[in-house]
Length: 357
Figure 1 (cartoon, rainbow, N blue to C red):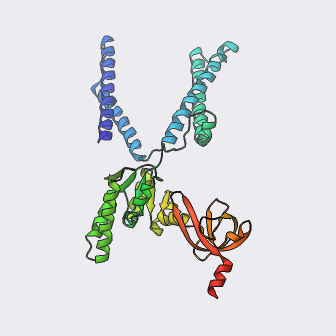
Figure 2 (cartoon, rainbow, N blue to C red; figure 1 turned 120 degrees about the vertical axis):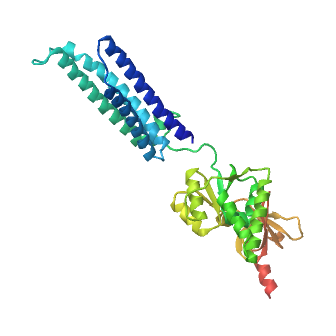
């Protein structure tokens, strides 16, 4: 709406300027006993309105404008005009440095020099704009704090997919305060949750209601803000709309959907996959796995020995007190993950063999 008001004001302002100029011209002609034809007046106003309409039409053709490109054009234009002005000073010295060419009047000679200055200005502006646009990504190394590459200040917001909300683990992740920035739930995702909750299938209905409960829990958390985005996006389904909205904002997408993950990655959208996150957080040692550990000291329990992995993880080994100072094979029995770190419990391999006997 504001854009339409701006365009209408632009056409009105251009028309007013044209009318004022025509009235001034009419006054000058009257002082010289002349008259401005009405057709000429209409032609001036109509031409101004046509030019203004052409400018708006060109502006409408390029709906998605890149701020980096626009900034580069303006800076290049400014630098080109400055270079043209400096070179124009040398052109102005030409009449003083040499005789006037034969066959040219003084007026024609000055017009020629003026044309040369205009041509120099066009060349300077083109070269400077082209140079800035081609080197805009490295421009900050030349002028500090000037950078044309698109940079998002702060942390990108996260768009939640339907699968992540139904999964429910996002609520526990938020409580760890590992995420920064806001969480955004698009309206079309909320509508999909409602459709699933109203499904005739009992299993789908349970999943949809669980998703709505998780969403309510997310809105009540005190760590991150959760916003319901009312804006719609282009696309034939929820996944396409989610990717389109993420590109427009820009934002990251959190999902459990393998296909959505692949498509978003191909479209250049950052994706947080909870399954990949869970895989990365998986314990290093699994029950039944054998690891080689040096027993560093005696443990608190009876006959316990304590060793450490390279990353500092404590390994508590049953019946290994006698092996202090020695490296033994340990069979992992369980792992314990706490906020203070990870602990691995196991027993020596020779004890495992004895138990089987």
